Length: 609
Ligand SMILES: *[C@@H]1O[C@H](CO)[C@@H](O)[C@H](O)[C@H]1NC(C)=O
Ligand SMILES: *[C@@H]1O[C@H](CO)[C@@H](O)[C@H](O)[C@H]1NC(C)=O
Image 1 (tube, protein in one colour):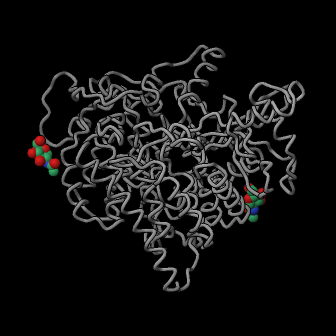
Image 2: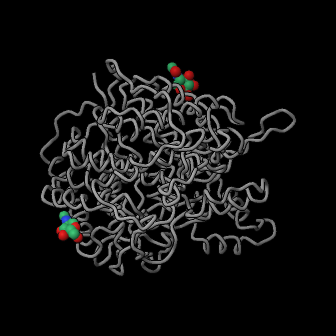
């Protein structure tokens, strides 16, 4: 999730892209970016703004349902029906556990729940109904529409952790959230979908409480209006106020891949549980356009990070990654296939084709001092030169792209491709490696490494590493003496293997533990439990405040305690702590053979035969 996009893109990344596209195309549709990213600063306290000053009465969804559709759909894509296929089993058959193992596991799980409970209680006391608690100052923040993001994101975690009285209190409170208005001028449609719609749907799937389905429909009715454009492509940074006034809308020209391509799980599930095909139809039209253009990009199989929703061309730009700005589009392909019990083969095909390309071009093995055989997923630029596609790999790792290990392991099980499972395992091992290699035991937001020539073997060469690190810092090893070179490296606090750490933050992200959790459920590898525990302890001890847990500015510090940025995004309670809890649970609690997690860790029920 983002600053902006799902997996919350670093603002600098977006800024870089904006400058790039401004310079090279000068056709930037800035409307699409007016609310780009989280604004710094504290809570907005502006009251919800009612368009037309009208008083809203009756059921909350009435405003969006009453609105006249400007570009009606004449024939809806039908909700998938038929008998779901028996898909290959995802989870390993776990045998019986020794008493000692169980005791250890439950102790760890209890510690995770303690951390969650502390944070929840502080949110409840200090920031109830706001999007976020400020975990150092005790203030409140509203960056995600002001509809209580932490409350909604935490509903299913409360249920899963067995906190029923807290769950009941929270469900009663959601009745008071109005999706008729927002504290924000522009609504981030993607974030609203994954956090709010996903949060309500999963809590409904788990508890069966109809009040939650009503809320899901309410959010769904609002989001559906963002698709009311001539070509039915959604507006991703959406001026809801203009829309509510009946102003005609057109989809934007520069849209992030993840933000336009991450609807299929929530929208399909919402259509399945309500029987109303309109949401499935809305998402399906977008995905069909992706399907048509998948073989026609500069790097066939993958789509570039920016696409043109107005012209419906998804194949023009040149940067290809599984990471920031793209991520959950890919993640949703195998997961949607699983959600509908295999009834939509297009998702399987799109996934397979995308991963063939990504495995070939984006994954690289980095040169490491212990020569560990891991993989990292980088960004590929593909350009046409003299009729030939020329690719260039940017060997950047991101915490965010750690989700890819779990995606490939899960996808590989679902389509029975062991190559995918193996690559997913090596990518996940890479994230575990990066946690262990960092002095605090927490991996940074972004980093660079040196790709090996071959994935088969990769000898450590300290000189080569130093040279690469100095080059990244704009120096050459030939121009300085060995002492100065060593001093420069030390000054940058680079653990061996990292050639640069451009963004040393840790913002309480989930993606590494997400993949460790999925891989553990698939393989039962006991070392993953130990890694998960080490990660949890490192994160909890370094981020703990008087009230809760806070994002960190710099995880490379060794002399002093890392400084805190007073931020606790809703995904800490919605995702990170949920995955830590589930990795130490009985494996049948939210089995991957019964549920798929949306990109905000909200488990949705799969169709089963
Ligand atoms: C909902 O809002 C009303 C009015 O502000 C308040 O009295 C009530 O306690 C709220 N309900 C919950 C469950 O928070
Ligand atoms: C499995 O995936 C790999 C990588 O995408 C591909 O090369 C291979 O053909 C696939 N195997 C099967 C049996 O489909």
